[in-house]
Image 1 (cartoon, rainbow, N blue to C red):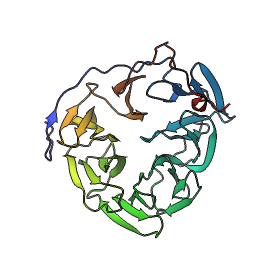
Image 2: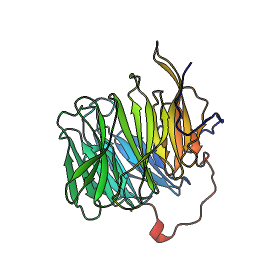
Image 3: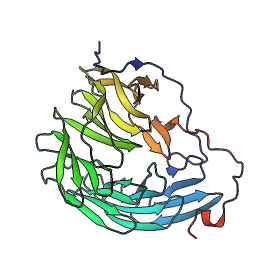
Image 4: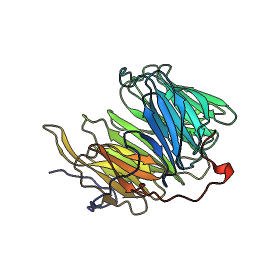
Length: 352
């Protein structure tokens, strides 16, 4: 029997049948598609990335390195970040840096940013952060002015560690760090004064921090690594454009080793929860749940038994499962052949 420690919330079992994500493109080729399906960034073949929109298609990145591409958006929907991963099928290197580019939403004109991993857009998509896994440096860069700040992490950090970063204001960021004993910390850092202070430390080693942000708050999830038996927790810090981040409250706590993979919405958080765990054979039953931030109630959203990942793509929340994608939030069927209203000249999607 699995015992779950709850802090001011109840577990509401409500698993629903989810629709499959349907588009005119192969899901294997989609790197990003907008909520209405108007703009689709498609990997045509290894090394070639294209944009398909309004029955027009253009290839705007092409190389000879058989590259794969990762595209990320943010809730601000102004720009997209692209990571180019060379020789992804031939070279498995956890500290290999990727070329990072940005493009305007629905466009193809690229702008080079730098080399690193784990890129993330911030503050109306005017800033981007990324991590150099070789030099152990977090870079925070203004996309418009090119202003660059860098934070050097400890050289003793594991090569498997990727810090998480959230930008609170143009002067203030928070990021995750870990010491040589495996204890995580959440650090607040002022880019102007270069002063830092620790907001929160983990009480147990062998766990990792996840960060996600939405209107008015930042969530800090503490989840164990897969083969380590530790408890799980989600904290919430209220933010309102100020740098006063003191004080947070626990909105979820469990003795189970949850997978995490948080996605923050305005009033709720999706994550993957461990429903049962056979520790003798390390077998877990995992489902996607929705945490209501107002009531702290948990609602079970799937009946898959082995949910492992959540994806957010232009406010659509997807679950990859056995070769398909299922939709938790947003429209699921983008196969409509009806022509959309004509775009104005300034809204034409292709920079050609």
